[in-house]
Image 1 (tube, rainbow, N blue to C red):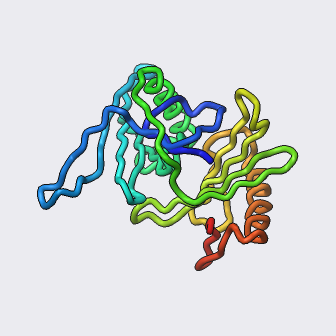
Image 2 (cartoon, rainbow, N blue to C red):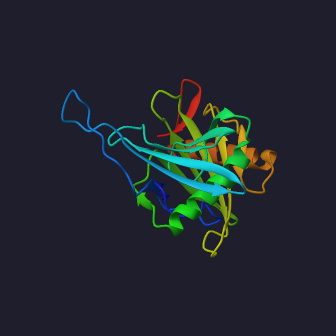
Length: 215
């Protein structure tokens, strides 16, 4: 099971075990009561002449935590805080470009001791065959519609396994984009369809209002 990242290490070829959060967090309290509002932390780094910021938000007990990669050209979000970009919310960068920069950011922050690992988020279904290890994770971040993240890991026990990550934005069984990895979209879609059927047959996935989600 993969844990979330509230900022350690580059999202390298090795699967991350948890959520990444910034260590240098600041706790804010609402004026109306004693309940703390979300914890927010910022870190900055420079890469190839460009300046970037990472914003890490922690909202205990809610599906509102996320990491955000911010540049002057785009904003991208890691809703699961697992080291993988889930959406480019502003700008023209591709998911793959944002992912590459995000991995650089995590590696940089990890080397500076500014990341920590927290518990996993979302519901997940994992399975494997002779060639790959698979994981489907359903995330429902705040007011956003639920989506599925599909991970394929080859040679899982190798020091640097090959990882492919893709997003089904509508949780409707169709892969919309490959965020990371060398597998073609058509191959990822085929493997995803196989895993959806297998998970549904095993009762691990459920169809709700034309959406296929982890039970």
